[in-house]
Length: 309
Ligand code: CP
Ligand code: NVA
Image (cartoon, rainbow, N blue to C red; front, side, top):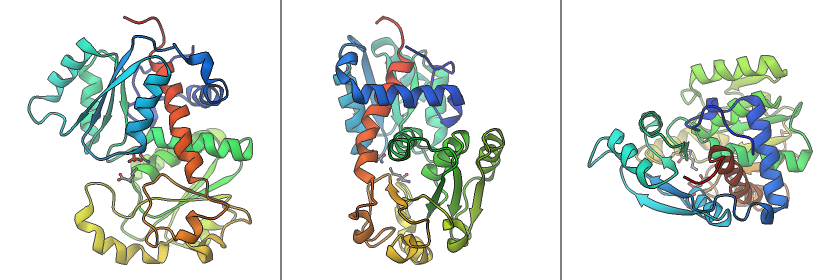
């Protein structure tokens, strides 16, 4: 099986474009022929460390490990509270084969990777959500054949999901627009990196506060919660600022005809998206959720290549 040279997936930067393509191809194959991979991770145990709530990420990693012949152990709570993160890493590597971590701070997942001699996967941090976006790209590929030359518009907060989307879209030749209210821009360095990736593929990366402009010719419209986990105290202020950016039928009509609707979930109906849009025939949110499983199986296979220890 193909492997990942970086040895970890702490952010979207750990995969080369070729590895990203391979991961999506492998995910499609795992989805088509799950039986071929039934014992691929036989005897392997993965550690799941979650500092924040999760339905999709947690369950799909656990199901993935089990369906590949391995298993998963879950630990919920702060990482590095009782003891240094470096010690957590150097304990887990003695018992388990890989760490999946959902953290408040990107530094925690980076430190786990720095100190553990086993692969570490970012299962969402304040900066990135790569596992989500692999599933999203797989979903778009299934609907369109190829994502290259199409346009994806993200509407809402310039957050972790927006960052991972722009980095992967640009590398796959998918034009990207990030439509945000003033003051909620994505990280400038990440935008610059995404634009650099886009130079190689021809993909454009646009950041705008203008809804009409950003949605022009968009073949898919993506949104996420207005207040991410850890920002609950800002929810009221954000609800006010983001109100004009709600994805409803009128907003969706500004995109290209037949544009798909995506959301990483969980969704707040009548906040960032109306029930009408998320329940409509253009919504692919449950395909995205299903594809979390297949994409993460591919990721586990690529990171755990080789015989059991
Ligand atoms: N989309 C996503 O990551 O969902 P969970 O927070 O439920 O894992
Ligand atoms: N941006 C959201 C994504 C949840 C899957 C958050 O970080 O809470």
